[in-house]
Amino acid sequence: MAALRIPKELNRLFGLGIIFLMLTSIPQIGAQGEQKEQIIFQDDFEAYDIGTFPSKGGWELVRDGRGAEYQVITDTNYHSPTRSLQLLGSYSWSSVARKRFSTNASIIGFEAYVMVEDYPAIIACPVGFWNKDKALWGKYYAYVSFDSNRYIRASSPIEVRNLQPYVPGRWYKIRLVLDRSTNTFSVWINDKLKASGIKTENAYEIDALELSSGWGSYSGVKCYFDDVRVFTTQLQAQPEWYQWYLSVRLDDVVLNDLAFILFAGAVAAGFLAYSRRRRGVPAAATVAVAARTPPSGESAQPPVERAAAIAEAPLDPLRAELREYENYLKRLESLRAEGKVSEHVYQALKKEYEARIEELKKKLGIPDTSEN
Image (tube, rainbow, N blue to C red; front, side, top):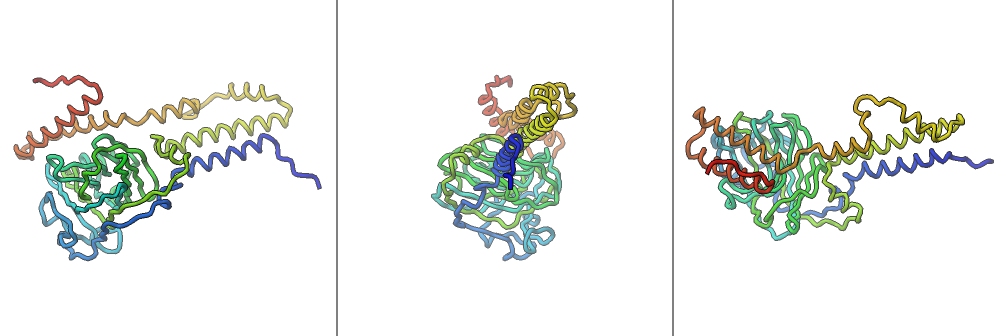
C-alpha cells in the first residue's frame, strides 16, 4: 500500500495551526492552576441579618455614603447563595467598607464577585488593597473598578488599564494577585487573565481590603459584593516562555488578534499557492495575483501595520489618568456651583485632585500653566 503523501504546503499549514493554538491558549496556561493558596479571610455574607452591616465579621464602615441604613446585607441581589453586601454613596461622599488583615507574605491576592446597578458618573464599585492612613482619603495600591467609559479597569498610583467592557446588573468575578516584592500585579475577570505586570508602589503598606461605592455616588449607583476572600499564594516556577508572555504589555485580546492575523494570512497564502501550483501556475504568479487583489474594509490594512495600530490603540496610562483627574476636578467645581458639596469636602477633594494632576504632569513632562 502506498504511503500517504502530504503536500509540503499543507504540512506547513498544520505546523502553523499548532503555533496558532499555542498562542491563543497562552492566557489560560498557568492562570490559576499553578497557584497554591492559603486563605487569610473569606466572607459570603450569609452569616449576617438582612438590613445590617457585617460588623461582627470584622468589617468596618469607614464612610457611610448615603447613610448607614443603605450599607447593609441584602437579598435583593446576590451571587451565592442568597445574600450580598450592598453599598450606596451620595453626592461627593462614597460609602467605604474595609476589613483589615496582616501578613508578611510577598504574594497576596483577593477575589470578589461584584455587580454594579448602572453605569456610574465617574467610577463605581472599586475593590482593592488599601490603607486608610496613607492618604487623606485612604490610599489604593491595586484595585479594580467599573468606569463611566463602560470598561472594567485596573488601577494603581502608577498605572491605569482598561480590561474589558461590562454590563450593569451582571456579576463579575474579580481576581487580583499582587507580588509585593516587585510591586506588580495581575488581574483576572471571570477566570480569564486580562492584564499582568501592572505597576504599583509601597505594597508592603497594605493593611486592608476595601470595598466601596466609588464615585458612582453622583448618580446614586448601588454596588453589590459577594463571596469575598483574601489569600496568600506561592507561584510555582513557570517556564521561561511563559514569564516572557507575562511581561508583554498587550492584552490577551490583542495577542490573540495578532496571532489570528498571522495565522489567517499564512493559511490564505498557503492555500492559494497550493491551489495554483496544482494548476501549474508558478509561485511568483501567485504573489502577483495576491498583490493585485483589491483589499476591502478592515482587512485593507496590512497585517503588520494593523497589529502595530492595535498595540498603539490604548492611551498612555498616565495621560488617561491625568484626563480622568481633570474631569474629576471639573465635576467637583460643577457640584460646588450646584450647592451639592460642602465647602470642607470641596476644598479637601480639590487639594487631592490638584496634587495628583501636578504629579502626573511632572511625570509626563507637561509644563504647569496654573497661576502661582
